[in-house]
Length: 68
Length: 567
Image 1 (cartoon, rainbow over the protein chains, first blue to last red):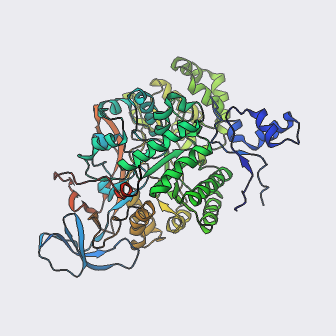
Image 2 (image 1 turned 120 degrees about the horizontal axis):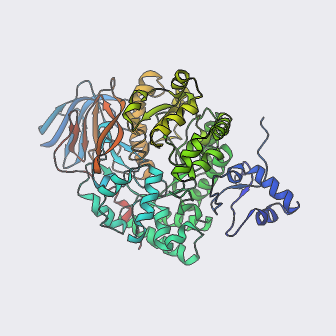
Image 3 (image 1 turned 90 degrees about the vertical axis):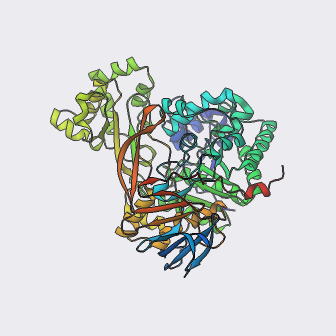
């Protein structure tokens, strides 16, 4: 088993930021979790219009590694 | 008696082993002997001073449309390419139902940047199935074709326009599996998919709506016959790319398939990217996966205009939103002083898109519509701005506005330009040379000549590869990975795809515009220098004065898939 360099998930059909946040970061309040997820996934947060998120997207559920 | 004897050449047999002076004999389209040969032969060619090598294989092209009006995929042959792989990035032109031609055509033209007039004039839609598409091109082929079937096409066929909206049901996935089997049986070498491309309406292409279970199901079919999976990942972002490499590693191990992604390119915007990605590939390979990055040899050139959003503006929301508006609104915004100030401010602080470095001052005026602007062609916006006493972006907007936004601007060598570093990567056994994009972006920049550039820049100038190694990387290294088992080597029994070139002069020429597209369309190409003759399946297909007028000898390859396929 190769450990992921940075943990991620795929969105599921019908997902929005809130549902992903509840599933991926259940220990956090939803708003806080959404904020964290959006800050870790700028490729989705700032996707140009129409900004569709798909089931094949990578969605990181932890922050990027600190630069060493 | 041989059909053909090529004598006194420096034989680089594609294996990468040391070259030697000798001869190659051909009969009935196959190599029958290599070494010290005397003949007799119906045709004897003296290759003194030249390298004699297997024909090169270009694993990443978009010649799907061009093959319908140009079975030679020009100018591929003169660059030594005797086998091309079209159908990359989830897009082939088959299988495709009649009702989806308009959508798929618009998507293909948007992503591969092909003029609509040429596309419409050059294509006679006589097929729906993959088999019938191959029938439409087969008789005219002067180059070998190893076609991929596009995942987006599979989805469209089974799901209709819902393919660009949602995940597939279990039943739809089963239907896609069956359709993929049919395409592989017809001659597809594998399947392509994309995790990044957007269609002409800026929506994700259908393949991007697939869940992992759909990828798994399709890879299971590929695994039954040794089919290849080609993918376009987020090649500009280290973390995303490494995650994609892990996905490909899992798919490769689970289904026993070769996976390849394109492109991997060196980026001044993210200089650590290539090393980290290759490290991840190395880890996956060490764990038994076949994950092969494709790297092009030439620097990245881009071109754009201000009629529609493009990757140049992917990280500048104000520009993107403006470029999405109707034409008259764009004219208004680009002329508005306050809006100009905002647009300039955004561009000056932009995060570089897709790993390239966009320097508007160094951007050139590439093509103009008004005769009054002809003198600007080839000049940088920086020099024009200095002359006019304005900002380079103001100069760009003024020029574009003066001709209804039709001006084309070019950003040359905006990525993949650290040649010392790239030379090391190109020589790495883990990396396949590819990602050339032949047949795409035809009216924006030339995608041809990567083979000659490999020799001029990396063999002769930087010396990161020897001649034998360079030949190997362009021939057997590609063939063996793709399962094209009878090409890529100069050995008895192999297909007689042979190139004869001057190793001291083989190079790409300058970018030129030629008017050889259907409907009087123009495109950018590069000619080759130093290539002497090119044989496809034993037939002289190209020589220094151009294409030969013999019968087309290209083939759809390989045919081995059919034998292993249980329908």
